[in-house]
Image 1 (cartoon, rainbow, N blue to C red):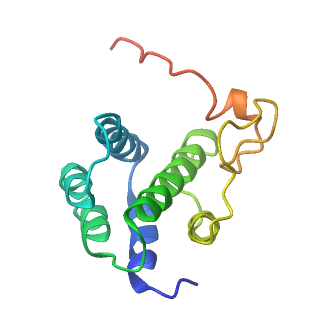
Image 2 (image 1 turned 60 degrees about the horizontal axis):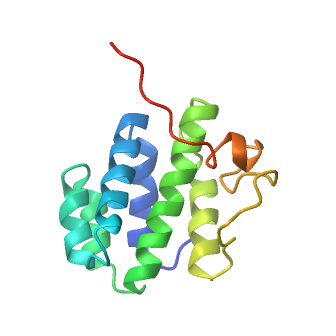
Length: 141
């Protein structure tokens, strides 16, 4: 259990989001990171187009540094996306809490992850066949 209720609300928000929403939120955060070192306010504004709850968590969550907040959010998003993609079900709240706690405590597996190691998301796939896979273009509709 988190010491902060805001983290619980973030986990509940991620559990309710559909796969497309999770991916869109992850993409917008990554796009902001590619532009340099955005502030929490700028990240919250970008995230707000996809989830008001995530934007509020980013902007007002005072218990973590900016880098820790972003790492916790991106880690939880990666786990949520992996569960929705490979298990076709939302990630259990305990799994999301565990991922965020590991990041919060500084016990993270820093990249580069060896490609034949298990993926960090808990999917039981190798990293190279899960989150280490190159992006695939979407099929035409």
